[in-house]
Length: 122
Image (cartoon, rainbow, N blue to C red; front, side, top):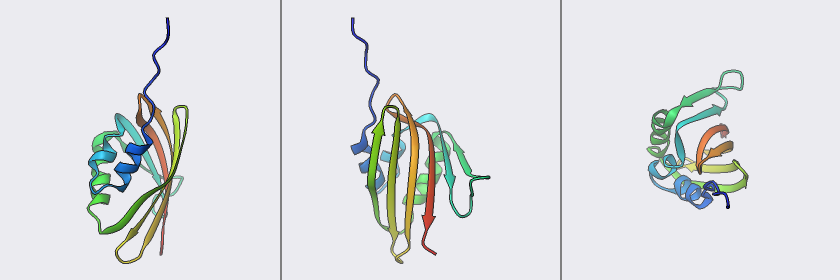
């Protein structure tokens, strides 16, 4: 008797979600109980911004996708077992660029725990 394989993470869905025009596709990749930690200039490692659950993550993503961003791109993604790492880049219409690196854990094909480190042009 064989064992059922757990669902793998869909990296093309991640690309479509990040590079899409709305937050809905990207949000669908998060588990209901997902946690997202964000580290940047304003929320440094000793006090990161922590979002608990899809509703909180949805609010943040809706804000991001409402901005005047001319390019949003998944630059690189690596999947190893139940862990993924990916790099995103975006550019605002005024030329400001943002780069983020994420490390995440996956369960049942959904992101359950993510740490994102981002840097903005100043």
